Image (cartoon, rainbow, N blue to C red; front, side, top):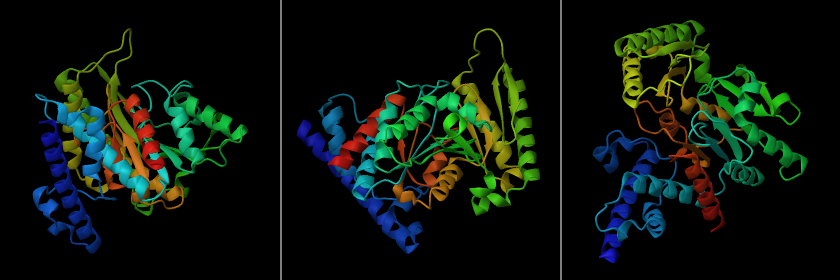
Length: 367
């Protein structure tokens, strides 16, 4: 029974892999609208590399014993991790990875926490830097002050500085793109907090230069109105937080931490998203409305712009040489979702999974 299930599952993965290969061939010719996969899944996007799904399934089946189970069928997590493995296998066989970008909360550290010295992801990132891979952290956290990012990421920044002192790495490239795609900081051994601010005009994509400040503030005004409407309709104990490139709701300050329920957060995201989608302002400036776990924010731009900006700033790195790692890939209220437009991606569910993913990446690189 186990052997038969393993064979059938592997055959299914092989068939899907062939559909993706056919779609990639059509992409190359500019006729992706005619691919078999496009007809089956009209919303399918761009593939930056093939996906070795059959081999990845065998790899995960050996670890998760998917085909050995009698009553529990392949789960969402089984498929998610198989897709991650397929992507890692393809990337490593296509040569070295030039850039790995990470989300912050729930990807590198627990929600609302910081990247501290003892975090096990740090030596894995240092190994990537030693191999010459550039590192980016593309996060919704939007600060104009380097000290704020140092507070959240000090464990990694201190470790990189120490690795330079010990001559374990040379000229490591580490960048932080905050506010999704609004504030760029670069690691600098000699700078305070080990970060230097990079003026927006030096790294902005050409398309971003067309975003007028008047339109940006007008969009944030509409978003703020939508958020206030949600606060009133659902009687949320929330307050508005307005920044120069974002607006959101956070719990009202006070004793104890107010916790919004998931349904309230998702309703707020979807209402705000719809109002902005139907507005004139939403057609002029790209934006991202997302659920931050215990807040909802609307940022100017999104993570596709953030990753593309990192790629350009670091020398024009291609999407097929870039991996973005994040935890929010559901289409509703998930800000890592848009990164799929810029590069290959891996969907993790916890910081521990990020550590396991990087170990697997090293395993496939060495194989």
